[in-house]
Image 1 (spheres, rainbow, N blue to C red):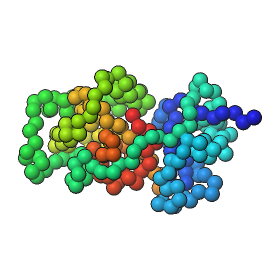
Image 2 (image 1 turned 180 degrees about the vertical axis):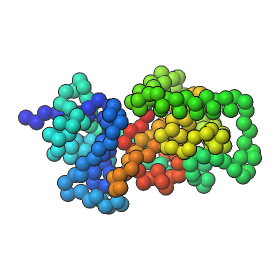
Image 3 (image 1 turned 120 degrees about the vertical axis):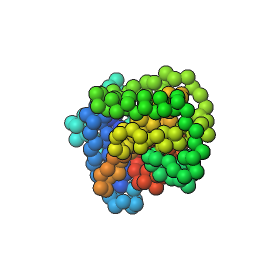
Image 4 (image 1 turned 135 degrees about the vertical axis):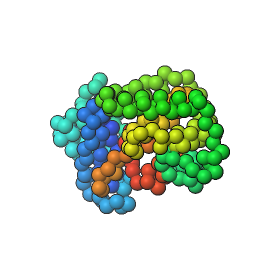
Length: 242
């Protein structure tokens, strides 16, 4: 009888370009394996197809010995969880509509009409400092767990897209004033921290591509990307959503 397989604790998986890609959050490490008979060509068969949970489990079971040895899978139900792809809606547009780009600067009429209050300044710099400090002093697994726990403990509320748009615009307008180069992990966390100060909790997405390998991160609400271009985000497959 074949033993039931589970994803090890803090391990996430997705299927992209004929590969199974793993994120071991505790090790802060990505790894990948190629599925038999799958096309590895970008845009080809299975290019960004997480598939069903049963199909994914079957594919991983074919290489279970290596995955168990690597600590990515386990047969202990108490130390793992079901093998399932990340249930994230792929981005279909940008919260700024045709102004579809990263949240780093805002010019023109949009910037001229944007009113920034003292509280906005305080929240922006407090969130930026916290994100920078967290990534410098804590392991990424601790940072993710902190964001996840806060979101879980927060009072539920219906997200107001107009408010989310306004606050993201404020973050975007102020971002060049914080002395740190663009880095997707930092910038996404800083935006998450900024919005959390107003009790807004969009998804913090971690995503990958296989050929060539790359990892990326952005913030998303429903099908709308907040801080990355829709086209660029669409090149990656979500592997974890916080």
